[in-house]
Length: 151
Image (tube, rainbow, N blue to C red; front, side, top):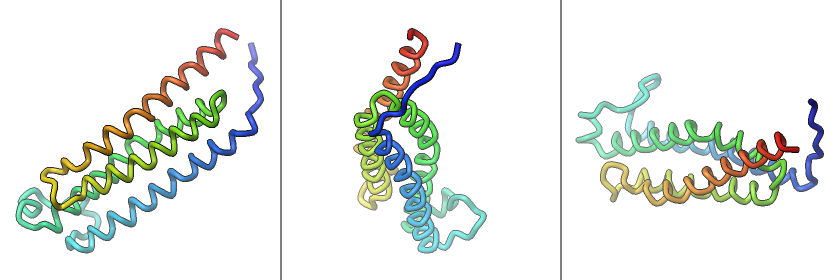
C-alpha cells in the first residue's frame, strides 16, 4: 500500500544540517593533510608506522588526525540516514541532534590530536558527546518507520 507524506516546512533545517556534515568532512581532510605534511608521510601510505609514531611526535599526531578522520567517515553515513529519516517527523529536533553531533565531532577530533593526551585518549569527551545524538536520531528514525507501518 502506498504511503504519502508531506515534508514539513522546517525540513530545510535538516537539509542544511546534513550539508554541514559534508563541510566538516572536508575540514577533516584538510586538517589531516596538514598533519601528513608535518609528519612527512607521503601518499598513498595511510599511516606512519608504529615505530615511527613511537619516536616522532609529528608522525604520532598524524596517525591520530588520520584516525579521527576515518572515524568521522565511518559514522557519517549512518548519521545522515537517520537525520534525513528522523527529520521527516521531527525536523527541528533532528536538526538540533545533527548539529550537536557535528560539534561533538569537532571536540572528538581536537581531543584525539591533543599532544598532551597519550594514545589519543583526548577523544573520549567528544565520543561521549557524539554518541547521544547519534543514538537519539536512530531511535527517532525507528519511530518514523514504526508510525509509517502503523498508519
